[in-house]
Image (cartoon, rainbow, N blue to C red; front, side, top):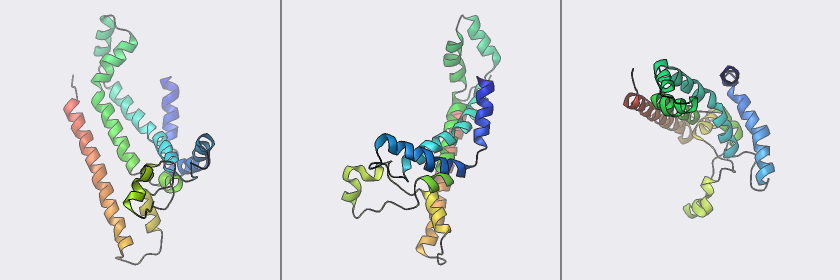
Length: 205
């Protein structure tokens, strides 16, 4: 199974993100409309973008996790087999705990990758922010958390604003740099957590 899945995931990692964006818009969004109803699901929605980004980061998680699992010494597996453990017991109780730092780091790095994704959310989630007249309007029925409506992410906002005709040093123009700084700090924070987790739970043999 590994000989089949790994090359498939590597091919998936080489697909341009703009293709994933049009896949979300042309296939995932209509599928969500068919399941939940077109009156509830807009053609541009956060759910379709989120599902496709989840698929997009699978190759990164699987590759890093596979490297972490492969780094576990063969002697641990053989010792487990020698004690009478099955392959499943060896994998779940010996190999995975020994590689947990690398697996957790893979998920955190993938989160950083998802936060910085641009094309998928710019195409599938919509290119306009959710505007509410007041806080009660936003909190009514938790409208701001509805994944079936269009929204604009931070990276999508940067794409939309930078592509328009804006005057230099205007509020909209300066917001690009503020959002980019926030994105940088978020990804830096996630990478710091990843490095701390690796150092804290790493097992050396």
